[in-house]
Image 1 (tube, rainbow, N blue to C red):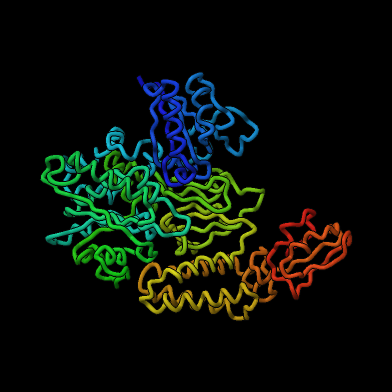
Image 2 (tube, one colour):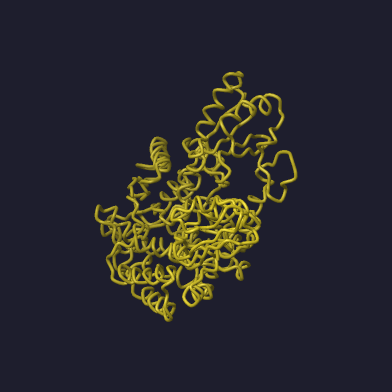
Length: 597
């Protein structure tokens, strides 16, 4: 008889932290203590607190252990599983409760209290490689319902009534997209899942595929029934080996259970799904480039119209939604449009998954109701900024998004509000920055990414973004000129108006948003040849404070170019004409005498 379940995260983050070795050690230890028939070990997808992996949760107590190592396993088995005594040194504690001891269950944490898990409902709960566990969580109930009780028109109407908008970036109404495809008569139609997650710091789709792949398969089958398609493709990045493996296992299991294939639920409806792998091109996240890649050609965008719902994959009507969008579909069918509408804001219904990263205590995966403020995300769910630093900005939407300044930290996070302030929802990356980040450098980072990833098909993106990057390079190297800011704005708005695809049209956003909110930093770089955040190497100036210098000579010994001189036990000085601004002197000084301006 099973008396305890031990859940161990086997998502990419925890796996890279050797969680599978922890699982193997636990299973061996259970056998050694003859507990293998009483304790069930379950590997799951991502729990969300990625920075604290490997994570282990023991039920029925709900004790939440973090950063577990192989060496910790014997103590957990002997103390907790045998004697019922929690190993408090391994339990997770909220930053606000640092002085407290004792166990903290998952539901008690500040990280989870304000979350509402819909798309992530099964991640960290079930074994993603076991279809029976998905079925036990009402899996494939929605598919059975639509095939036996609903018409395709009714399915589309429920999705339209729910207010679900595409979670891949643009926020287009999902039900309307399905309606367009359903209205187009054709001998063949397709359902496509965009799992080509290319934004720096984004891992929402990967985590859903790793933790709950059947939710996407079920949703795609529902979409196929709604628009009259019998074939689907999941376009997933080849860099996601765990997601690919679990998707293929899930597809094979669904076929075996006749939940994919011919005559599903004896309804006469046929639908099957196939995997296609992307080779890492960022542009293939754009829907028409993705379709071109599936067809076997170089991934380049196509002019629109015609839109994919009219002429998509192989020239046939096609709907394309991303992983998170599909993950919401079964829950909407099971619980109703009104249930989904009750969450979120007037024009942004439901929840949104974010990959929370950057200068934040709790990096990881979060799912919040639309309309939650940025302050709640950063300081309550995310635990605040480490080291007592001040919040400066948050980047949403990746290279296509923009920066939200500290003055707008109480902004509700939803589609229309973010667009109004010069950012965008994007697929869900949210990178937090503190006072030590240079916003000009941040803009340059994202623009360089876009320049490198441009497919080169259209002139505005291929050449325009490169010219903007050249100006940013000059500014951060201390060679900025009067008028550079105006040039960046002019070129940025021109590219937004003329680029071929959505990726090119949004490429200037990081630059335009940082100019809008941090213009003073651009002006300091250009007019004063100074980087206020002390990040831009070419603008940095190192000096030694004579009141703090002890004359130990360590800085002079470590300087690679001999730019520091002085006598032992007397004040040392830096020759700025020789200094290469490597920062070694500041790193080695034990007295804080080296200053950077």
